[in-house]
Image 1 (tube, rainbow, N blue to C red):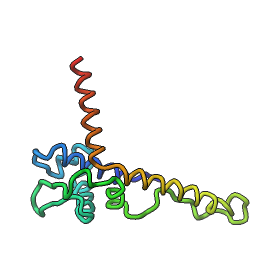
Image 2 (cartoon, rainbow, N blue to C red; image 1 turned 180 degrees about the horizontal axis):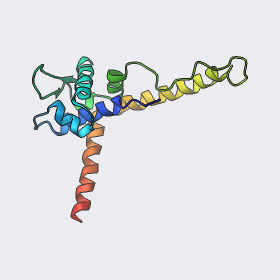
Image 3 (cartoon, helix red, strand yellow; image 1 turned 180 degrees about the vertical axis):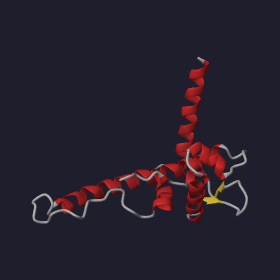
Amino acid sequence: MRVSTRFSDSIHLLAFIEIYADAKLTSDLIASSIETSPVVVRRLMGKLRQAGLIATTPGTAQPTLAKPLSQISLLAVFYAVEGDKPLFAVDPKTNPDCIVGGNIQNVLGQYYQDAQTAAEARLAKTSMQDIVDNILVEQAKKDAGQHA
């Protein structure tokens, strides 16, 4: 089973819009950074627009953030692109006549719910401003290393 990258790609896209705000932001340019297709970028932008996180004008480039980065939590980005689906899923097709298969859903369900609650709390506390600030710190470290 392939893990979705919509969440990380959407964070990437929002950070790109902020950091390259002075450039002509086309879906092709953003896609070149994410290393995906412009169609994927446009789909993600559609979800982010519907969630009120970005603003776009049909037929033109230049998406903009709809609110300050400090007001965009990672949890809001997650819900925008993934909906309210759980982070973890227990296989529902196990043998009910087996001790493990008959009990694994109930046992794992609570652990998974606890992990989901903790992850949501952490994502709610982390803003896109935190992400962009850390991206710029990492780039400054790279730049300093090149000049050393």
